[in-house]
Amino acid sequence: MKILIINAGSSSLKYQFMESEGGEVFAKGLCERIGIDGRLTHKVPGREDVKKDIPMPTHSEAIQAVLDIMVDPALGVIASTDEIAAVGHRVLHGGMAFTESCIIDDACIAAIEKCIPLGPLHNPANLMGIRACQAIMPNTPQVAVFDTAFHMTMPPKAYIYAIPYEYYEKDDVRRYGFHGTSHRYVSARAIDMLGNPEHSKVICCHLGNGSSLSAVVDGKCADTTMGLGPLAGFPMGTRSGDMDATILEYLMGRYGYDIKEMLNILNKKSGVLGISGVSSDFRDLDDAAAKGNERAALALEKFIYEVKKFIGAYASAMGGVDAIVFTAGIGENSIDLRRRICEGLEYMGIQMDAEKNNVRGQEVDVSAEGSKVKIFVIPTNEELMIAMDTAALCKK
Ligand code: AMP
Image 1 (cartoon, rainbow, N blue to C red):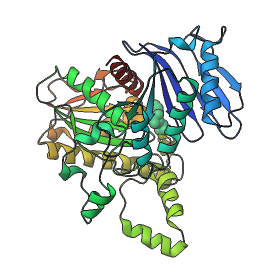
Image 2 (tube, rainbow, N blue to C red; image 1 turned 135 degrees about the vertical axis):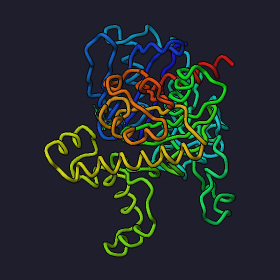
Image 3 (tube, protein in one colour; image 1 turned 120 degrees about the vertical axis):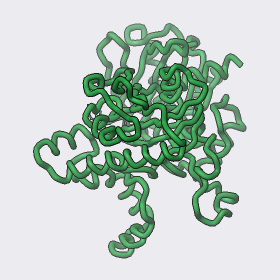
Image 4 (cartoon, rainbow, N blue to C red; image 1 turned 45 degrees about the vertical axis):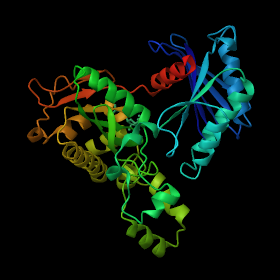
């Protein structure tokens, strides 16, 4: 089935038009500056990228611009929008309501709306994308795929926070976790690569601009590093990761920040950017560290140290580990970071083959011969998961 995948942000909208079986991508692109002016970048494999300034006061004009270019005789890939069998939307927060993807109807929209307090930055934008598609393509089925859904199999001991229980009961405060579609895809690939054993314990390291780890037992998520929101876990590009709440009170008192300003610092100015003062991009940090920048080196060391700690914690929590997976921008591309994360973990049976690890963006087993634990690099493919879920639900 030919599926259009939409990932709507507050002022941007990513799209990909692809085949759900086999994953062939026909076109993809990005609408930027929605609500400001509007710019479209459209990419078709084998052709030159197209960039156009198109007024996009709202997400509706952005979706219309995407459909227009898709059917454009010169730049497009389809003769009519009827060729779009269904639309799959990436939705950030499904709260406790969604354990899997669902066909979008009024009840589904109402449930996504109810999750807005849990995902205040993303869910309203996701809903704008959904509503715009519904208005422009009223007869095309739409499916919502949630970043949180894969993690809903976590047991209570993993998802409960040690605060008064009533906040869980009355206010839905618990660990949810994110990047679920990526963790689902790479853990399933890893289980396949392990030879589909009946029992498997996999640690997925999704290391990108935002980063999270998950512990996956027999294909089901048992724990993950992100929490109620995506700020939790270990340091990321600009996010702090887990934080001692005392620091918030201390800094808010000293500098007079309100909670919004404080959270903006923790979300946008922290992580490896905060420590290094150089960049949130690991390539810049590598360059700076190589030139002797000590804070860039410290930021990298901190990131590696915290990932290592979670690998140890998850191996311990699962009572062992069969495979470690590296995915997303850093996990797929940083040869050095993968090496440094696995270094010193030989006592756990984790042995990397330096030669095999010399790869970028390929699905490959990089563990040394005889390594008790397999180490896989698996390029993530959240879009394929969304397309497959969308097609499966539509066929039902
Ligand atoms: P993502 O959020 O998955 O798109 O990952 C983006 C991040 O991947 C960038 O911010 C970079 O830090 C990182 N990245 C991409 N390529 C490389 C590379 N060759 N070496 C190190 N980091 C990389």
